[in-house]
Length: 207
Image (cartoon, rainbow, N blue to C red):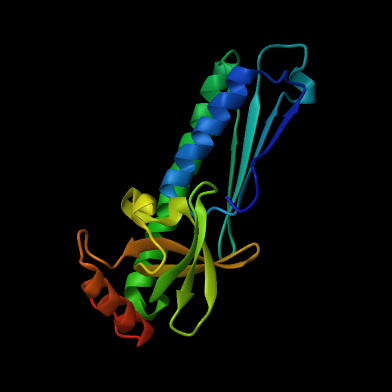
């Protein structure tokens, strides 16, 4: 995510187990959408229930470029007053995951309908330990990308000079590349890779 997870507790004790569960669920959301801008999670017990039963409320706020926001609120109904907090958290994230999948599918359909949004570039800088890098477009523009944006878990296969296909999205700090796919085929010889890179620079990707 562009912005670290925002996690707050109100009238509820914070425990390592609950925080670990929330972070696990957030990581699964990032598997659905690798370009989430931010995620806010609030765990609270309403004022009217502080001394009368385990009625928890979980609120999620997720922002996705270019300007989408997913908001989910979950709390037990009258016949579920004693549901454990972990169950309410799981239900909230399950609802958020469904909405996020629908949004990602819509965005992918839009990209397929407008293939000009998909572009080619070359990896120019890599920071493997930090898990990010930069690509350069045929127009000379440098765009940031995160390892989670490389599909098929191919981040480790990237090298400076690798040709890629990507989709640009607007993040909190400007453009970033997502849905990155390696153009070079596995096992390609250096001379063939040079040809691919030259094609990319000329704006004619060789697939």
